[in-house]
Image (cartoon, rainbow, N blue to C red; front, top):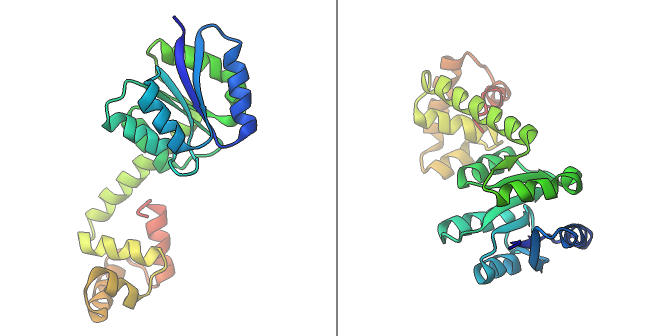
Length: 212
């Protein structure tokens, strides 16, 4: 019996191309083609296919949000994310949620049938270049936070992050519900602890240690 597949992408050329690719393979049966995320999620809930191939960025509901809903609702559908680009944070989140496959659009036509076959057999296939970059960033961020925590308090780390996003003292004070004077005292202490002398140097410190 062929594996039932739903394909969702808001780009008609990509959607039609994947539909034609799968139509020629008796191992798969396309049960729905969807042009946005809301239709895709409704189709997954209705059809409960073995596999859903989803564009990461779609109108109304993203592919990652659909994956999250599939996990939360315990729908027995394995999700393959198709993307032209994806942030490192989204990669980490997708892996955490148990994504079954992740394929770059630039290689989709060559890899999709192979990925689908292996996912249908219970394997997990992720683009190693994308995952390795995301995991490296995650590890750097964790190491940076650990290093900062040895020197700074949690409130000081919070202020460093806000400074690095470009907020001024009054904005930081408003966001943290403290006085502007308290922010200045914290910054003076932070500058002394880290050996920096300006907000630019402090922002560089945050970026180098992936604190943002």
